[in-house]
Image 1 (cartoon, rainbow, N blue to C red):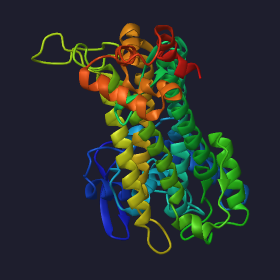
Image 2 (cartoon, rainbow, N blue to C red):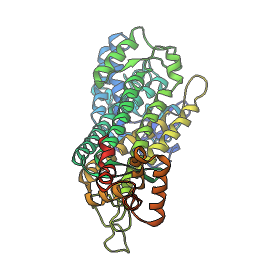
Image 3 (cartoon, one colour):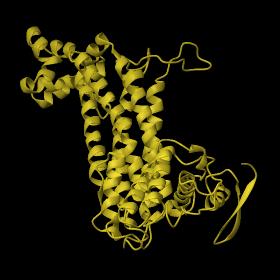
Image 4 (cartoon, one colour):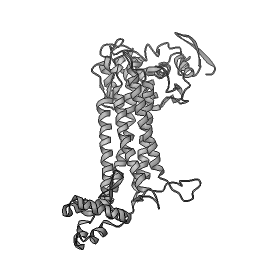
Length: 464
């Protein structure tokens, strides 16, 4: 087919490419929303199609649709969920509120494909037996379908994030074991503090990430899995057949393999997107932990000649267009930028949730786009950090030991024998004269050589 067909909606005639599976509402949306230059995220289209599979089966089971029509809709939606007809989804993520435009794009494509499967009119857009609103959208509204699909999409895109995070945790744990005996100076307030091992620090990084993972996972399981499907326009369920909601949820669990559950109070669930904000907050918490860790990695590896240089990061690419031989912490810098994006997304999502008014929250499209974007960034960024940075970190054992022995915080070890005030005097003298604490203590005759060796051994504070 070539040329155009004419479709009519409540606003008048719309010209649609003759061979397009989409229809009038998609064309209007594509013309109205030329904003980001992007099409819908495939994960969101897949999730919407999965909802359509579930709702079609449920409507067929309760008699709201003829069985053959329900089956055709479900089969068409299954094709889309598997990646079929991907070029038919056109609507920019930045669109009218509630995701109605993308939802109708899916409804129109499903309707025309289902019509084909039924052997209906060869002219797309005829809707002889399958109408995008009357049949494909039976018992549904954008206000319950789109938020449900957002939750499904975000849950389905979460495993790669958690897998990458597990890989990163494992990389830190492996390095922690390798660095268990590497003694180094601790620092608090960016000043000398008691010695610690590099292994203990890397073990702490692993635990920070493990706790962040628990927050993300529990929030997804307890909050995101609660869906408003069946609430229709404002949570009353008006327009849905008796028994439809329960069957639709059961079918959606079967289609997605997710442990979804229905909201108890649908009027609340349709208007409240706070669960999505809470999940964004969990991702932000993860990003904060990763940012803190990356900042440490950059600081402790800075050099190689004029910085702390306690360990070296893998060299992955040249770092300067003008300074020969310069190598930068490129992977860590990239991950820092990913984390900034995640943190910014949480703010956007919070404001979008707060912008809800009266009986529904309309800013769902930007929430979906932000969450799916940062999940992709985190999955890729965390894996790169594990594989191309953390797993290849190597310590400078001698430099680390020298820092530990030079630390003025070793005066803490003198306190039991000499008292706090005297230990502080000796520490300040060492600082003023540039001598080591051991040299000052021995010159003052405060401790015998053997006693000084034992008391000022940096491993004592680690072992205790």
